[in-house]
Length: 509
Image (cartoon, one colour):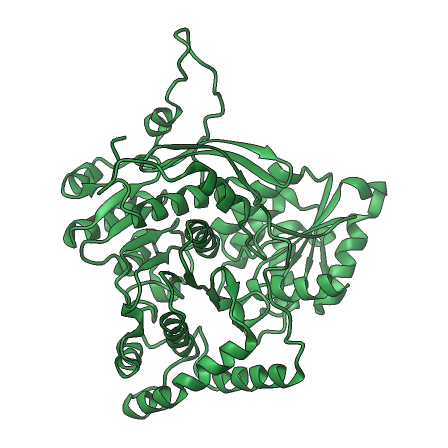
């Protein structure tokens, strides 16, 4: 996240442009000498050589019968363990795959893990594969508004009718596994089984699979991803994954399979050590951001940013990405390298992908609830940052992209999160903060969150509104104060659930 982006494209006295990518490599900091030993044992992947018009988030089905059927399925799924209650094992999902006939083996997969940026990166990978005329399945979590968002075919969430049909298709097999296991399949495990079955039934040419949590024992980890992607690792879910980036990397490295290609975003040194050791153990090929690929340059543009990316096969210029922030540019570089690796570039082929197709793909990318503008006058931005690293990236992106003269935060968080760290990351850019709570049973109470916010912001900069609709109204009113209407904004953040509910309220308004 902290990598300096070279911005000069001046040519030297010979008329040639200096290799900006080499400068990225030269300036890379905090590299541990021990990494050289690890890297010597791994193979390195290095080649020798328009915006969507419809809301990407589905609305409720117009057909009342379809809406009722979807609600009934959601109610049945809700009787199972939720996503925060885990028994770390893949035995149940493996048993389900067995009785379903191993649907996850019917297509090659790109497996995405990490702490931040997984969903956005997965969406970019999907857009690139679609642009190259591959039929895709994408499985991501959590959803912003509708559970159907989690299972996508060719870039679009499955319909409510197909979601319900898929559930009922596998339900007898789910019940069979439930009866044979110590614990019933969880909510996430059933959804994973549905996704894998739906992709096989489609059928898809490639699947882009985001882990739910961790890697080794995550329910998604019954696939053999030909490409494993690790987005930046930071501290989150520390009660289950570990208290340091290195410990967390041990779990996330479980997605790296024998002979796979591994695309590593920039990582803390201890996490990089763990991941590279894992790659050595399974004879995986590695491409590292800042070494084999990366962001050469980027400039803020209207509605997003213009990028020059270095892939493992070569350079791609004039890439418009309709998403804000340096972190999104890094996600784009990771996604590009993953798709190059999927097509064999860097290992079998020394070439670049068709640049015009790459440009078209990136220009079409959306990422709902991630630096998403949903209203103007004043501008309201939604971002699902829920840990300190994500909040820091969002704070930097908001400052760079918008330059608000007055920014008000609306924050609703979930239990078990480092809310102090999140609030501290946002404190420098927020004039005031309205603390609230979403409808989830895991939501931190507004008063409890306010107590932390007062310690970070001071009592005079904190307002408490337990109802989210009241919090949004209060924030918009605060943003308009002191005749700063033209340069004022509201940032809604702290949780995917908070952002999803705010999105629904604001889109309806």
